[in-house]
Image 1 (spheres, one colour):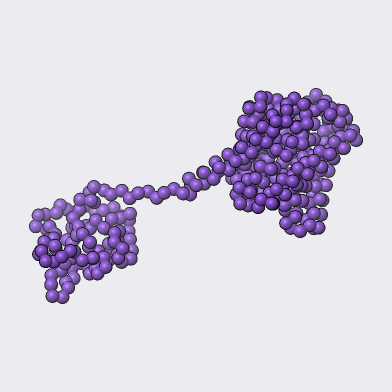
Image 2 (image 1 turned 90 degrees about the horizontal axis):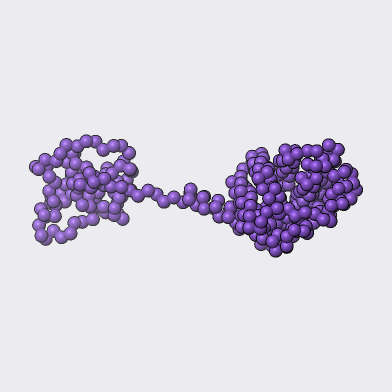
Length: 366
């Protein structure tokens, strides 16, 4: 267990040095330079150093250190908890920078500067970690320094299968980030750490579950076993496709949930068959048709009462037939509507009131 204690000390020293670098750069650099470059560079260096040490423990720990996979998964969860709590908003992942660019949360020069900072940070982390291994502070570091020149490939499956695995990991990662984007860090950081731990358990034996093109480039591209083109297909094309797929999936779900069309109004045959006067408009009813209808309140939503059948003698007279052939067309009742039952001067009422046992088709509850 001495080798594990040395690795834990390495993790603690890495987080401490990166936190000091963050505070110093925030105090010395302008806010824009810190957010676009220094924060991403320090976050990428922290992530790269921890990833290299974890990979060394995963390869040498079971037979040289005497600890199993449960210890490694616990370390993954704790390290990503600490990384999410100290990264100050930097995820050190090119696919996240591309996602922020597509969501209009970052400009193109800012995104390119973030990509350069991430590559520089991982490169510095790899150099410093190999220097620490050369000090041979533990037996694991001694073995790793001897085997570093002949590293084994992290891709232990076919290229199409590895591409699909990396795309699925990136899809789940970006979907979780988008889901918890506006949440508090106390909820977002444990959710992301738990997801990364699950993906390390499921996809670690196949592709090491990088879903980070910059990290995979500096960690495994120089190892033998596959060509650079095959590595690029798995560790570049897979995460980029998965990240874009996750963004489109999330945006499509939001559009479906917030962009539903209103339900159409269904007319009942019983209501359609009721007797009404065309064009009649009353303050007691809600006029659905006509541009000149006065603004009146809607009736309360209540079930229609049962009405007795209309007797033949109670039929409503047709004002057009009574007025004669010279009366012309019916006036626009919605513009000059009178109260039902009121008569105009010098002539019969052109809009007789409906009996109480009849209901206008315009008086339709919602």
